[in-house]
Length: 317
Image: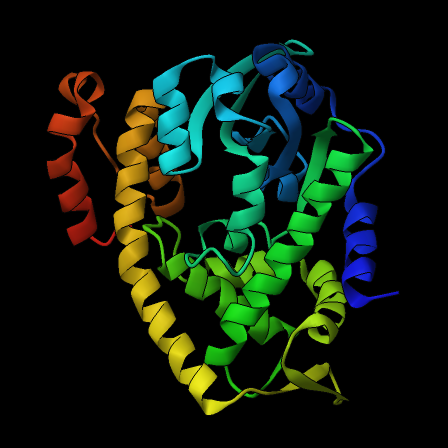
């Protein structure tokens, strides 16, 4: 069996046989809203780590076969195609509780392209290299396609970060430093230690997938066991390392611009988007943020001053 096939099987083992009532309620609401356009749904983020769908806002990715079919409207489909994904807000009642979700809409072709080496920025392959679970798939074929994108994201991520990391390192160093690189390529509210926390939360997962992924990469990798961990000695040509450093330098600037454009787009698609952004910044940084009625009504006009002040205060980077 090929390493990529072993990875796909390992990722499939992660999906629990039974999801919570709250997650199923979100799934059913989205299936009702988008009907036959839905190929699959992916569950990821802090609620997956905590196992509590009532803690904050659930993060979901809705995979559709076609944007126009999903929306039935021209402009949302165009925006989604130009700068995927579109982000929306959902509330449902389940077991007497209000369940909140933030879900991103992306087409299957964009997901496949965005997790491959054809996609320069880390926005998609960086996210889906981290643990996530398949909440729904249309059939066995789409199940297989989505799982293949998760394997592809994992391999793309490692292929892009290893050339800028030390030649000898363990799984912890790979993921902590690699995730930090992808975070630096976006406007993020999380502190630099966030990558360490993510690794520690999924340490068992990363230690399982890393040796399999190393065998599937185009680099020469030698595995050595020391007293406490498995060490990877990665041989990468100097030219590849130099080009990779340049690539990550460009991603930092490109990512900030793309993040701003996605925030602007979210003001049209995300109900209460400015309040959600303020809540998330406060949650991750502890900074108090005041949202005025004018900002809620005209976010594209009145939010820039606040964003600049928060950036100056290093509330996000």
